[in-house]
Length: 587
Image 1: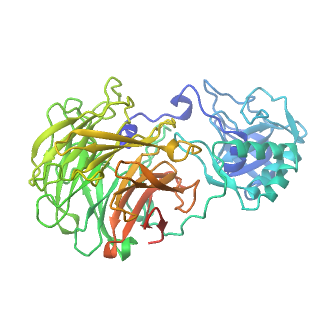
Image 2: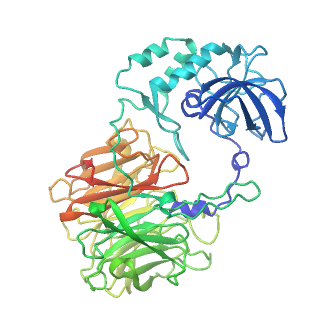
Image 3: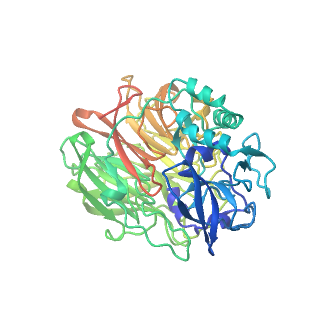
């Protein structure tokens, strides 16, 4: 749901976005540059310059390039004004040198034989007019060329990320050690890679070879990207696709659950799955406006209600915070027909709600025993009518008791204190009865977007009256103290009982890792297993946006995982086999 809040904010070019930036480290330039060249500037234009390429270190052969100039800003400037005749070594992404501080633009001496390196011995970037530290170009060229033979790039890093994620290129580390001994500059790249936060050792298990169920851009789930306005960046065309997923149940009674996936532009997609969840046919788009509904972020928070109205077909709850700062948000109940069409809708509102009501929600089972699923709804300060976060407010949680027609019988505040961050509880999940008292439980994602060590999830034990009976916190650091924080808890799924002990278990997504937690009745973790860019055994996603569990043939569990692949403006959805125990496999 935080995608909607971010999308509402003005998009600025990097120099305007902040008064500082996080520069590339030295080894990251060698790892992620698309092209590394040496050459001489031959001509200047207003915003570009021409480079006669004299040597290519990384990338295909090229004789001449037209590149964009670096624009000086309040926190960074080029080492000197551009001038015809300057010799440079450039680490390039697209048509420009890398880095908001121009880290990828290194001056050469007049003879083109030595490189002035703008990085200290510890790999930190230090821009001065001309760095005092010079290294023979031949030594730098050999080290940069050889770097990718001994290190493998797993992820380039991303928003709030930890930089490039790398591992050894093979299980045999002898070539890497020989590379480190080849020159002082190669040794510097080697050491800085090993001590970086993004280095993974041992080498991860190879990813599961699985064809994506959905590739959003190619499959037509995203509109064509709009043209830029006044040279300012525009939101990606796939922004918000599959930021949330849920399996409402088996709508068409073919023995395989359907999947509801958030779409672009206040819409969701209902996907009919075939071939054990490996194929989609006839995806149905349910748009807010076409349904005659209101609210923003429609589809970015959903919960499966089971068969609420008793017609034999599962139903769905969808959060819709208000676009009007004077109007409260709401939750829409969608009474579904076969194949995912909507027969009726009902609005869920509660007295005193703010525009952020409906930011996230969860179905927590039938607490009061009247045959209808009940909800927990987050009223968040992160959303509603304005772009300004109300830092004086904390998220407020409400237990909403429903009848089978979708009417609100009563709403009970659920006091969950102890975390002042506005992102607290921006992901919610209902869990089957954990402690054996007959009432379902609630799981809150407490993911930290700023990478703090408090990444965790919390299990909230509920009473039949909606009261808070107990809480159990599961922190990433408790599962693996060596693991770098990374939005642990930003996505959640309820797989049921994976190991046959009668206790429901939990799937927790982070930015680049997925965890399967086998739980005890007290909410502790008796066993866990991680999958992802660091652990391996997963799928090739740069970041994970959402997860959902659904039932395949003969009740076999399937895990749908959505996220960003190599292209930043795309979204892939994979389907994997889940269980028994904390295992993933091909479906």
